[in-house]
Amino acid sequence: MALLVVNAGSSSLKLRLLGDDDTLLWAADEMAEPPLRPDAVGHRVVHGGERFRGPVRLSDDVLEDLHALTNLAPLHQPKSLRAIEAITEALPDVPAYACFDTAFHSTLPEAATTYALPREWRERWPLRRFGFHGLSHAWVARSVDAARIVSCHLGAGASLCAIRGGVSVDTTMGFTPLEGLVMATRSGSVDPGLLMWLLEHEGMDPHELAETLEHRSGLAGLAGTADMRELLARSDAEAALALDVYIHRLRAGIASMAAAMDGLDALVFTGGVGENSAEVRKRASEGLDFLGVGARVPVVVVEAREDLEIARQVRGASRFG
Image (cartoon, rainbow, N blue to C red; front, top):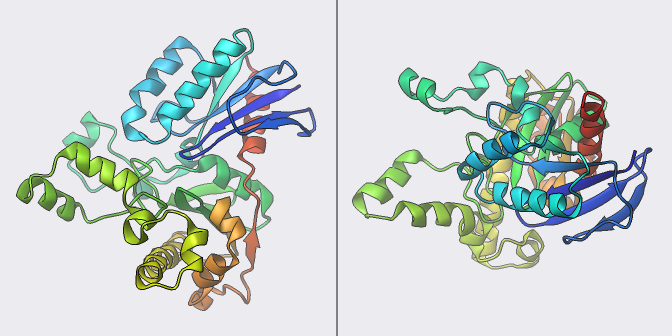
């Protein structure tokens, strides 16, 4: 069964054609038609909302729901939907499936998903923590033999996941992919009172506020660049502060994830920054010896292979239509 995996991220597009044994038959990092007709297509979709807790075959009804979720993941969902549209136009008779970044976190306990908001709000709207990067964290769970894993997906977007017994029990992203760690252009968690102050006392336009938090914050807002390699090569005060803020939030998040599992058996780094920056891994691990990191707890690097996780899910879903 040849599978075409379409991974539209916040800053990239990856097409991978995989054979029966996950052999890579063809790859492209821009929209193109594969040289061989696939038997099925698997699309990475960031937000599945409350409805989609596993892979699903795409239909008009499913697509309508995915479009409705766009305002919860404005950096990602539109790109996934455009990719779906383009591939469907090129391969209209090939069954296509959506695999969701939120689905892996459907196992989160209520204590981890519930915001301390009025019941009437929570009943009226889906105001809960969903979590993201689930396809990457799921791949880590299958790749590392350890009971309690903190998975650090560090790329343009960044999130942590506490994985106990192969399932997600806590994570840093929430209602949207904006919550949690400092990222390339996203702020991560910010005091909501600060945001209310900007809206009420400074008259900031809500659209400008959203654009700033998504596109002009994070490392870019702190030091003028979203590129971790450039930051590590610089020696100026702004770059040093950006790295300190990034690592401070990262270390605190790792400890929080470990606390959700009553301990830690493996600290795993994945994603572009997580895999390629030994300096970030070193700085993040420093000061975590109280968790056993570096002694009892190994630091592991896992290549991000969301394509293989998507392929696994599509093969399972296609057996049932």
